[in-house]
Amino acid sequence: MKNVIKAFNVKNVLGAAALTLLFVSVSASANAGTRLDKSTEAKLVKICHALKSDSRIRLHRTVKQSRLGYKQIAEGLKCNGKSAMDFALFNDANNTAGFLAKKANIKHEGMLAKR
Image (tube, rainbow, N blue to C red):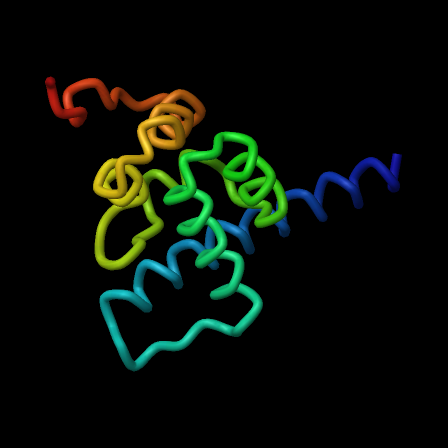
């Protein structure tokens, strides 16, 4: 029973740490004086590159490696001053924008340009 409690506590701590890192990254973009550690910053930059790549597989792998949730990324990550969804759409990465919207349970059809 103690092993189960320890594992549960570790998951809670990791989840809280990931959420804290996400909020720190959002705060860092708003406050230029605050810096992230290099590994966290590198993970967030990789997510931005994956969003831009328009590859659903690359985005999935990068998000999985970062240990962040899609909802956290959609609501908190800023890439070049834009939200993750806006950044993907701005770079014509409709596949990754749709995938992010599906996984984060947000609607993106209104954001897409009509042709």
